[in-house]
Length: 253
Length: 74
Image (cartoon, rainbow over the protein chains, first blue to last red):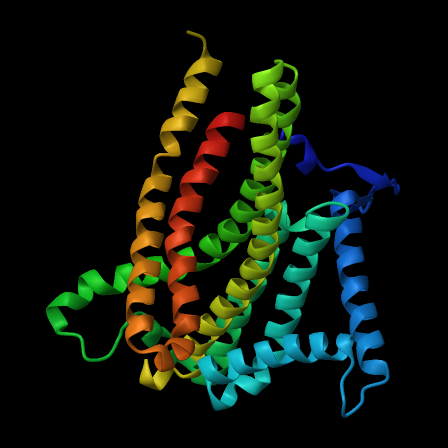
């Protein structure tokens, strides 16, 4: 059977000369991961410019889709963060669209950029960096009250504060691994079941039956993966909102 | 047995962690629908919380999966 992990290998598409910055070698070659991300961003820009170019009171199909996505994230920031959520809407919306578009490009055409730990880790660090910066800017040193919930009896605090700190530090890690794991896992499962079809069909008549079962399984799994692709982008946006809410509305934490 | 065989066994054992995530997701969605059937009008507003719970539960299963991949390729 073909190696199901082969699809996640990074290959250079456009080779660029490596150079050194302060003794550190930098290679800015365009790999398939970078190319997929460029496609993803271009797809978002083209979709939104086309669908909102001739925006009317009676929306067309494209406009309904664009407005639906917009409203989804707008409601999300509004309902989770509250009144101040508007300020963070562009950030959350950008993250959501980028992850969604990367996932869908991975499902339909080329390469799943979100199956690379480097990509998901960057997104998670960006999110948690924003949370820390916003928290410190809005609350000053009161930001550290995040680790000390109000109304907790004093004897419990020595146990609770380390737990809160660890759970805060785990956030970028789980944010990274969730998206990465879902994408890698889903694509591996699809490849493995697709491999079953060929290897079972070579076994003869009973094998054909097994092959058909795996064929239907691949179709069903593909449908499931489209759901996961959307759901993971949504979950990423929701969790970004939740983490931002923790620091924006710190007083009633 | 050579090292590769142990690696495969270890990766398989690491995936047992997924059992917990499966049970957790079952309890989560089961209880959500139980509540949603009793009070359908309140279900819509709790959908975001459902997804947050799902994400947190699923993350633990994904950790097991990542460990399994690391054992297999490490």
